[in-house]
Length: 221
Image 1 (cartoon, rainbow, N blue to C red):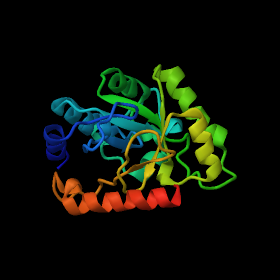
Image 2 (image 1 turned 180 degrees about the vertical axis):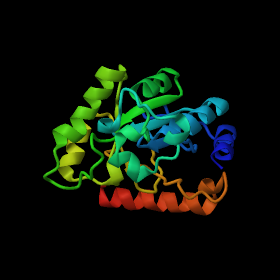
Image 3 (image 1 turned 120 degrees about the vertical axis):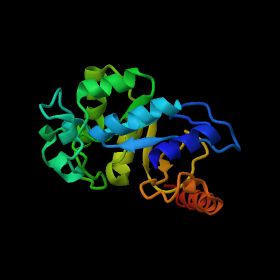
């Protein structure tokens, strides 16, 4: 399904990453993936190269290891909950794997918190969760990091203000299109349950995204 979806996107729509120039009045697609699981490196990255696409990969930095002593086939079997519970199980990409993908030109890294906790609590440690991931990705992987993706799409006004101070682009789940990169929060369409390779772009879906955009603008979130 993902292979066919990428083929449809590559054939039909220009693709962009945060900060790229966008054409007003034309639908463009920004591909984003969360959590930096190893299956992104093993399954998604080769498809990006095959179809000549680029994607934004959000990394929760405290789970990234320099290396893991686990065979690739076992790493692919690690469930999401187990990966977070035991980062040494190999469920996440390693630092060298992230570097390889970032230097390929196919993948741009984004910060996704340090410990992947919700940031809608005013007591959240924003220095650790918002600022530290940027420092890690810049110093360890030598990558420019301009985007922050809120874990679970949740944030408080304080967390949003902190993210805006340190990053040019701030993203969350929200099921809406965006008119450009100059908004406080960039909304993303959830593609986890695609019915067909092109179902996300069906006329009815696009109408719902636009209605959600209007609602977001009215509530200023």
